[in-house]
Length: 296
Image (tube, rainbow, N blue to C red; front, side, top):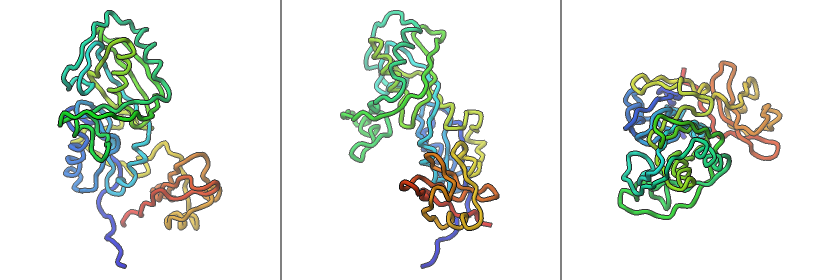
């Protein structure tokens, strides 16, 4: 059987600072033109009004996006008490108003505290979640609202601060993948006896990367596959072990030197990514992704 053509296009990750008004798909489409390749995907959708970090996988990096998606993320959001909207943010139509009276910072912090740790969220209708093969935002555009099962997420850290507007508060949230900050704000508002919606939302960190690493889309830069997986446990191999990894063999964890829960980033002596391995059985590990060596 003939082998496929080697992947000679650009490969790596790009950390983009998304502007408001762009969909994540818009960013991918523009990046394809800027990088002159069709092989671009994104990890972790940002709503059009939101700004901040969006990590793109390019070339062989597209195979690794799920390892970026599952990383914890940090957001800074402002939310306004007393007004609910159809989208849970400032883009939607007002669906309810509440006379909530003066709410103190201590009251908001006390309400927010109940949402720290493992919780369940009902995804908003205007979201990319699929139910029965159809995205919720597509149903919402048709005027259809359906029952959505709650999904488990984790709020690792949640801090609330005042703003110049007594009805608007700022929260900084570090959370698991799949968390909806719009839903969190609405739930905090409901717990205070009324409602709320998000006014502004910015993603400021993904895993080990802070927003200082993000570049404007028009100044897009690629980082290596290995650099994009910073923060994961890393193992450097050579000799017979390197050959085994290249061939995607299931290995004894001790032989590979894989300690902890993984997944493990496997590099060659030059620091080039070879594979990601993950736990398999009680004493073995297996390749989740084997990355072909760069063309030379």
